[in-house]
Length: 159
Image (cartoon, rainbow, N blue to C red):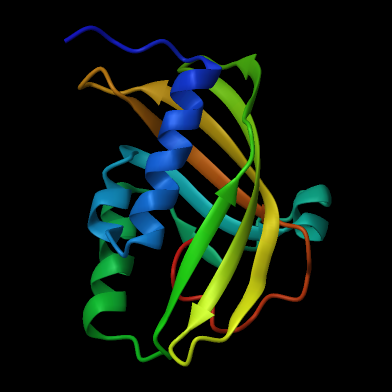
């Protein structure tokens, strides 16, 4: 299998797969879009601008992401909800030692059990994209930077 190039088309496809997995409650498949040793953080724009590492969600490996999904499925109690992502066009930034930095804007709408629909989060994904061992594009790092500092305490599902 030939490796994919890290280009805008590949980044768009990876972002579409990420959003689809979350929106369709296929979180086990979502974790597979990350490298084994990865970083996933959800933070606010203010914290990010100040270089603060504080995160609303933090995982530094695919195993931690898998544990989070397992907890969502078996241990956590939260109101039934789902998301619908609108993901903007990615902008490829500088190359890294492993791959390429990428920034993509997003908007997440939350749909509650009773049908109430609201804008839940807006922001940008700051990613490090790499070609994984399988030759497929993967996320080595995704920092989700939310525009607002007002984050609902019901942040259970990944953004």
